[in-house]
Each structure stands twice: as structure tokens, then as C-alpha cells.
Image (cartoon, rainbow, N blue to C red; front, side, top):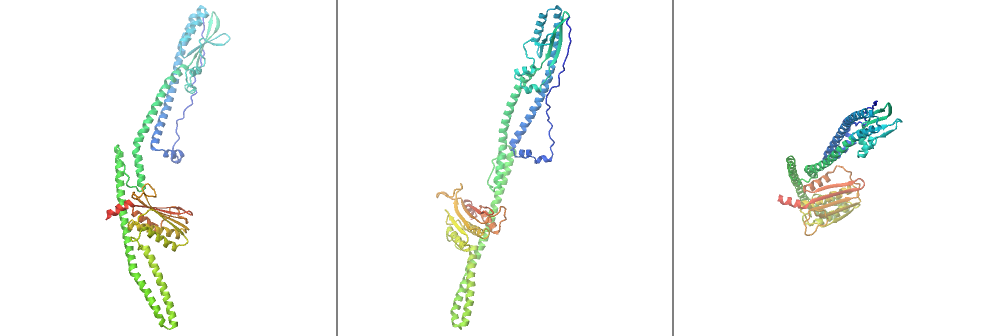
Length: 510
């Protein structure tokens, strides 16, 4: 009679590392941390894709936890059921075949049972306690999982402890050894890995496809926003002629329409402002012209009359006694000196108000004369002039603007900058930025540059009345005026006047 003695080792809950999914509490200080600043620098498309990827990763982690939990539970159930079947079959075989006393037949029957069962390995121990497998299998479940291609990390996650049962075999009152049953979950783990491996591959491929489609879809959706951003930058630069093409989406189409309406309003306001400023400048120039004409026509003859009378009195002084004649000549010399100073001041004032040669002499000659006068007034400064291809005249408004800019720029370089070298460049330019304009092409810009090596100007320095007047004049012609430089290095004035727009505006006013 065979006796059965059972020992069991309960399955442990496993060595799965718990995943800490708790997030850190966010407070207001997080707004200033590097992560938030880095996130704000990412484009909207990148933020959306990053959020989708983060959600997919979180879903993958949750799905992995569920798969591991279900796999462990299923393996425990399968192993327990297989152990119950194996235990019952081995017990019945020992009780039935052990009565005959045929050891070979008993072992042969147990071997058949071991070959038919899953998740159970049957071993035999002799009286010395040495363990031998009844079928050619590996005792280590982990090795069998490795043979099935299951990685070690998955085996450790779904770790299920082996269940051990031992039954002693007694034939004819003598113990011939024991049958050891070991419940092994390696086969179940291999099946779970095989099934979910293909599902994971399909999920990854689908996610890559979805992310690719989402990337291109977001590109199409955000393209109008990128165009809107570029348009706003153009408006910021003062390019009010920029317009947006209406996109297909109704919401964005309304935004584009509002942008175009705003651009039209700004362009109309800019045009009105330019017309008003040009009108003010024209009125100022007209008043200066009238004052200059009065000074030339009224004060000029008066000064000439004073000089003529002084000369006449000097001739009459010879009829006076010597002492009185000498005293009279001294007074006449003083009056003559004052008269000459008044004449010089009158000429300078006429030059400031309006050069008399304007409209009668080519612009190049007027500029050369101005430079010569400035050289006489400031002999310490070396003023170099470079005039390229320019027309004889661009109209009183442009010619006078160039004259005033040169006058103010060079005067400031000597008076405020204490410059020793001043360089002046004047030339026509085409739209592509080339200095030399081909003869058959109409010039589009008149470029004036004044640079010096003086004390320079600090960025953000408030302009004086002279520079403000230059800026108003240039903007009245639709041009641009810019000052660059640093303290101790020098200052540079760049002035661009559009000739095409100026001609069109002048003709429209006529």
C-alpha cells in the first residue's frame, strides 16, 4: 500500500517593483522653473504632439500594469489548476499501480502523466534524496521562458513562485523514493508575452502613423496662424501693404479678414499722416522761402545802402579838420564792421532758411557748396563727400530734405560729437539694394549716409529738435531715418527716400 505525504510552499505575491505615479504638487513657483520656461519655448504643434505622446505613454504604462496583473493572476490560477489535476492523477496512479508491486510499470505510468500535463514538472527522488527528472525538461521556469524568447524583465514583472508538492512512494512496506510535483508558470508567461508582443507592435505602429498624420494635419491647420504672425510682424515694421489670403477654415478666414481690414485702416492712416506731415513741411518751407525772400529783397538793399553811405561819408571826411576826420573814420570803420557782420549773418540766415540756388542749380552743386561752407565753419573736421549717380533735381521737397539732413547731420557731428572725420555718401539705389543703378532702369531709392568718428550716441538717447525735424521730413516723404552708433565709436545716420512713391504722391496732389 502506497502512502502519500504532502508538503506545500505557498506562492509569494511576487517581486514586482511598485510604480509611483503620484505627481508633485504644482504651485505658483513652478511657473518660473526651467521646465515651464522650456515648455513655453516649444511651438504649438510641438506642445500638442508632446501632449499626445505623453498621453500615449501613460496609457501604455497603465496597459502594461493591467497586463502584468492579469498575467500574474492567470498564471497563478492555471498553475493551481494544473497542480490539482497532476496531484490527483499521480495519487490515483500510485494507489492503483503501486498495489501490484511493479516499480517499472509505476514509473512508466507517471512518466506518461508528466508528458501530458502543462505547467507541471514531475521529478523523482530515490531513497538517498537525489532528484531526477522523469521527462527531459528544465527544472527552472525562468530558463524555459528564456528559451521561448521572453525577456528577463518581463519574467521578473510577472513573477509567480513555483508550487511544490511531494508524495512518497511505498511499495510492499518499503519506501522506494518520492514523486515531486512543481507547478511552473513559465509556459503561461511565454503565452502572455507572445500575445501582447504582437499587440504592442501593432499599437506602436498605429501610434507612429497617428502622430505622423497629426503632425501634417497640425501643420496645415497652423499654417494660417504662421502667416498671421508674419503679417503682424510686417505691420510692426510699418509695412501696412501686407495682406493675408483667406484660408478655407471659416474661423481663421474671419481672423484674416479682420487683419486685412486693420491693415487697410493702418495704411490709410499712414497715408493721411504722410500727407498731413508733407503739408506741414511744405507750409514751413513756404514760410521760410517767404522770409528768405524778404530778407534778401529788403535787408539786402538796406545793407548795400549802408555801405554806399559809409563810403560817401568816408570821402566827405577829408573836408573835416584832421582830428575830427580821424575820429569820424574810426566811427565809420566800426559801423562798416557791424555792417559786414550783419551781411554775413544775413547770408547765413538765408542759407538756413532756404538756399537761394535751390531749383536753379543742380543738386550736386548745391551739396558741394554746402560742404564747402561747413568746412569753413568747422576747419578742424575733415569732411569727405562721395556723390554717385543722382539726378540734377528731385523736386524742391526732396532736394531741400537732403540739404537739411546734410546740414543738421554734419553740424551735430562737429558740435556734439567732436568728430575729426565725417564721411558723406549720396547715391541712388535700386529695390534689390544695389548701389549702382543701370541706366535703363528707374531708381527707386535715394540713399544718404553720414558717418563720423566722434563721441557717438548711446542707444535710447532722446533726439533733439534737429534730429526730430529730419525724421519728420523723411517720414513725410515715406522714407526711413535711422541712427546707429555707440559711445566712443561714432555715429551713423542712414536716410532712405523712396523716389517712386514720392513721384506718385506728388503727382496725385497736383
